[in-house]
Length: 445
Image 1: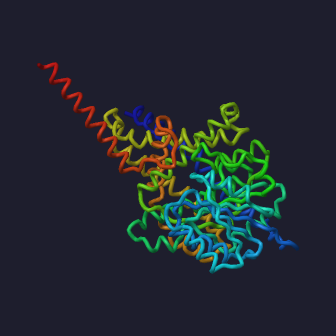
Image 2: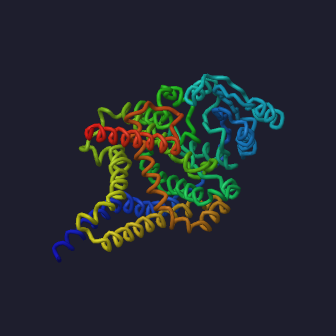
Image 3: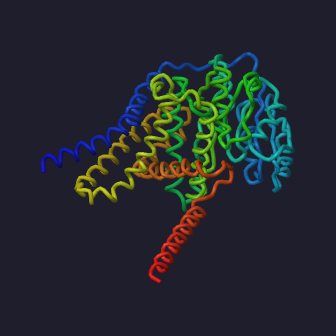
């Protein structure tokens, strides 16, 4: 009995070691380092000559959101006369152009251009890049809005770090839109906290170590000189933002940073179906880029010298283990494991992930000091950390399915949603059961 208990305790302790190594330790290190870094940071003085910018917005059926996106540029603290906005239309079928014309009349100081391109976000971006002007190129989605100081902070961060070729901004869910959609409030608050932790607790450390894996496709910035030396955006992958990140890093040997106080607000997901499609697409894009860039560089021997190898272990191996153990509970009891021990272990796992969430949340609150309203909102909704471990398990499950689907389906922006895929799986099960039943009936006859 004692031996059995010791074996079980060893088993569950090993299970707890995995997240401790890959999530708890980085969270604790980030908590300690972020406070030291923020104490040393100094504000960058305004330059004598403000540089010109080109803001590129890919547009595809964006009539409902395009005006707000353009207005957020016009209402930013950056001088309108130094900003060119290129709306790269990739074959929209709605009245996006009419919305663009309305913005032209309302914001006359902003240089607005409409560019018709082939379908596909990467093609739209590439066409606009060839038409860009100025010192820096900013890419932003047409279904989100900029925090008023975002453009200015991006430029000042470039000036403060002349060795940096590209930057990614901080992505947050729009808290005003969350308030307007009470039906999915719990989902949206979990998504909000996930984004806040990912950027203001995770990528802050990645940025300090020059280990950013991917720039956000929703909002990123480039020195135009570096962008023109790249191979531009890859039109053959759904992970064109990750591909560009790797181009800057491997082809140009350039540095990439996070600008934490350059915030881009995105719409919350419409529901679980959209989250399912979104996370699968992100996972598939990551795998495609890894195949293209690191086929000759991935080796466990480089575990400590190449951060990409460590990232892959966390993103795939550990993520896969989470899913396996989630379903393993249904077979552990028949194998002799105590139900009480299993329940206790899950409580311990939950408390561990809750503690990790609290550490990361405290980092987020420190970084959000540049926006007191956002900081108060994040603090007021800290209770969502109680549900965040469950949300993260669901996201891990979605990503795991994305890995499987990538092996059998060609990458596409039109990923099958959860409802459709569930129906397809059910049809396969029914078909297999039907064939099995008729096979048995045939043998009887």
